[in-house]
Image (cartoon, rainbow, N blue to C red; front, side, top):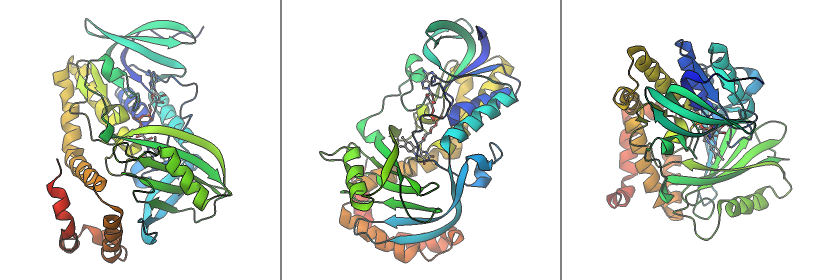
Length: 395
Ligand SMILES: Cc1cc2nc3c(=O)[nH]c(=O)nc-3n(C[C@H](O)[C@H](O)[C@H](O)COP(=O)(O)OP(=O)(O)OC[C@H]3O[C@@H](n4cnc5c(N)ncnc54)[C@H](O)[C@@H]3O)c2cc1C
């Protein structure tokens, strides 16, 4: 039987984008690292709408390979509840990818850097031992014990590693989106456009998306906030939309999942343990995107653990350098986006229509570069003054 060793410097649990990038950054530094994935195939089943950052962002992690790119995205169409179509050119704002191939390419990059990768191998529990952590893993019905100086918990939204390590990782109702998506076939439409629909009857607290793939297929999905939705479930909202807009389409794949949009955990670390990506709630609270965020966090966490191993200290105190770097880089943005998300929960359909009109007047005809000017910031503040009272009652 093909055996795993019983000792590594670091074990990374979960071979999603966060785990693979953590494993790669550790292996790049010469650390012995095992990357575990409980599923039999990395990347499958897909729980994602498959939009990632643009080429220049992704190529900071791995070279872009056309075999996993469907197409570049150049335009965004927004639909407020009144159905008005707001179109905005956004050249190279992202890429539509085949997430099965994309996740696998990231794991291959980790393996090429020197990480050992094992599929169908599930972490079952951990205990702290002198000098590190002992992980119990199950592979093909058999249990193994593996010792490591540190563990990276990159095990997604249902993360157990954080809980096993005694960290506070619970997700409240207002802090998670419930989402569901069909891959539909028989859909016409331009391939390079992201379409978003908003409204309390369409996607309470969240949004509905139509993201084109290839060959007349598209990912059509919805995310809703359980704290805003009424009696209906996410799937009811999606089915209603599909019945209305694409009654003749067929579904060739369906995915469901939770998205932790409440903002990051207070800390991502404890002694010998670091969490990354969805496990650390590092999804952007406004867009609900988490792929690139997980990859960035994986690199940061991996680098910090490698530093700690080099200096012989992977205690919580030492690993807090990862917290500090992450909050320095992203803390303010996430705080702002989490506030905007909470404000969004309070908007009625009339408010959303008004916001749509404001955006139409303010944003739609401007070039993307204009949106960073001081002039633009001033006109936003002036035109959106009607929203200020809604902010007043926000916690
Ligand atoms: C419907 C939906 C649509 C989305 N669309 C987008 C999008 O278009 N763009 C975007 O940026 N984000 C999107 N997201 C969010 C995005 O998918 C996540 O933020 C991203 O995958 C996080 O990466 P990760 O590496 O942290 O975790 P994951 O990708 O969830 O990977 C975690 C891995 O850990 C494995 N695992 C779990 N437990 C164990 C264990 N005990 N032992 C071994 N392995 C384990 C899992 O099998 C999984 O492979 C979407 C989410 C959903 C639900």
